[in-house]
Length: 476
Image (tube, rainbow, N blue to C red; front, top):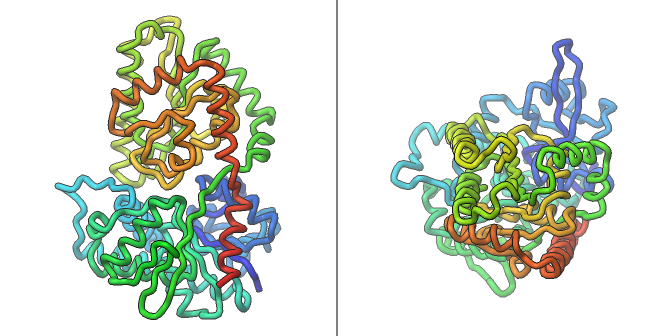
C-alpha cells in the first residue's frame, strides 16, 4: 500500500500504438506533468491518472488494475484508469474544459453562454462518475493514514468522495487554475456550484497558486454555502468540518531545466533558428492555442508596435509558438484559425524578401521551445487570466538577458511583477508600448531585472512545492 499518492487527469507518460500494434511511450504534456513527474518518480509517489488515448487504454489492458509500472515501463509507480470513452469525453470536454475552465478563467460570452439544460445534467453525471472512479482507485491503493494529493479542476468532487470511502486518509486538493469571484462562479447551476465547493471542502487542505485565487475560493464558500470563513487563519468551516486553505506558488527547478536545455537537440534548434532570424532581436512567446492565453491580442499588439516604430523594421522578429490545444472543442478550433489569420495579415503587411517579421510555429516541439527561451530578448506573456504561468518563469531562467512583458492577470505577476513590464492584457496599445520599452531597455537594467526574475522563478521548485503541502497535511 502507498503512503503518498497524486491524482490528476493527465499522467506523467502517454502511449501511442503503431500500425503493427507496438506501443511507444513518451513524456506527458502540460505544466502540471512537467512540474511533478520527476519529483513523483524520485520519491516513489504513486500517480493515479486517466487513460487519455487508445494507446493509453492499450497499455492499461496489459496489466491487472492498470499498474503501468508492473508492465516493465520506466514510469515510476503509476496507475492508469480506463474510464469509458463516452464518460470521459463528457466529463473532460463538456464539464472540465467547457464549463469549469470557462468559469474560473472568466471566458464566457455572457449574452450567448452558458446554457445549462438537460444535456448538461447528463454531462454532469458523467463528471461525477469520472471523479468517483478516481476516488475508488485512490481508496484501493492508499495505505492507512496515507496522504493523497488531488490535482485541479478535473477532480473537484474527488476529495469528498474519497473522504466518504476512507476517512482515515489525509487529503489535499490543489487548484492550478484561477478561481472565479462569487458573482461569476454563480453562473453555474446552484446545485453544481455547491457540489464543486463541497467536493473540495472534503479535503483537509485546499491549495491555490496565489493569494488572490485562495481569497476568491473562500468568498465563494461564504457567499454560496454560508460557510464560516477565517481569512486571517485561512480556513473554511462547513457542516462541522474545517478545511485549511494554503497558498503555494509553484516555481521551476532551474538546474533541471538548464540540464535539459543544453542537450544536443536543443543546440541544433538554436543553430537553425539563428540561421533563420540572423542577428535580429527576438520577441518570443510560447503558449498553447488556449483561449485564456490571449495570443491574438498579443499578435495585434506586435502589429501595432511595427506600425508605431518603423525603425525596428528588419531588426526584430516575433517568434510565436502556438501549440494546438483542445481541438475537440469548436471554440478552440475557431480561435486557432484566428491566430493563423492574424499572423498571415502581419506577414502580408510587413514581410519583405529578406525579412519575416513573424515566425509562427504550431507544431508542439519542446526542444525548440527551450532553444527559443535561450535566445529571447523579450518574452511576451499576456494571458487574460492564468493560475500561475510557468512560461513566465522558465524564460528568465534560460535567457541571460530576457525582459519580461507580463499580464497583471497571471498568477505569476504577484511574484514577478516588480521586475517585469506589467500590462493590462486587454490594452493592445499598452502592450505594444511595453514591447518597445523591453527592446530598448538599457543593458544593465535588463540584466538586473532578469537576475531578480530568475531568483523569484526558482524560489519554490516542484520539490519544495510538494513538500510544503505534504507537511501541511502531516500537521493536520
